[in-house]
Length: 367
Image 1: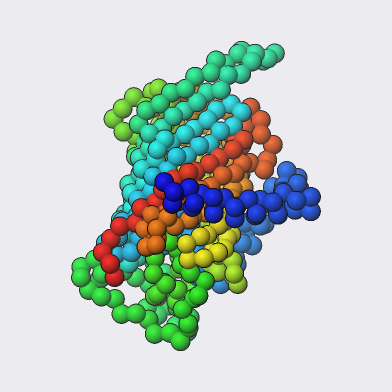
Image 2: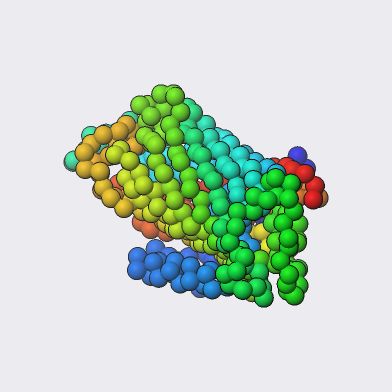
């Protein structure tokens, strides 16, 4: 408990320093509500271009919405226990907790299973000249299952040809074969690595790209008809790229959710920018944008998942990080909080706040 408290204080101090800079009168936070949609798109486009030009290891995934190309490593487990919240003026969605279980199959493939205990909140609304009053209610139950497989299909090292031997699955390690390390004159990075990971050979990678197909499935419960989860199945297909520019770590992701006849299709776009203060402490800013690509005109669904309304968009700015809780860096504290920098109204899905508080456990054979 003392170690956990110390980790929270240490990471909290770093995050508060960053927030102080952002919220100063000359900072950008005061002007965020006036950011035009076209500027946001340009920022994301330029950032993704930079990621594709100069890249190395960066850390996405829990506690962030944006993911990255990194995998746990051959025969290693990454298990995240997270308490997640997303609340706006009309509704709230919570996972208490969310169980996120990942396994490394070889050096480049990650298998994922995730399932939460979900709580869906409808916030009370007074009557107006158009709509009747909405009573508040809170429902809970088993959330939807998520099955995913991440494949880091491209990996480049300094001094190597751009295409030759850069593609692969990394499955040799899964069958007891040791992969041949690439030859490179580049010195290992001294900036540290993600908690629980060794400094080499990962530090030699300067460009990696992955895809992470994910399938959302309803469980055999009454969560859908009760309005606790969205009706499934749905399929999400993203691409991830990571990078380092000087002392900053960058990670970008763009994905498309194909939805279904009861769930709109949507785009997801994320960007992480951060720094590793030590081998045990890292902090990041995250810009994430999720936008409906189409509108379902017929009224169907239950509660907060009822269709027939306008297309929705959720654009958030978050700050968070990771703090190792033990010397081996196999127990890590995960924290993230943020909110929308667009106008928050009852009729929009822009959140008043989002948050993630969790613990990460890393397991596996010693190298």
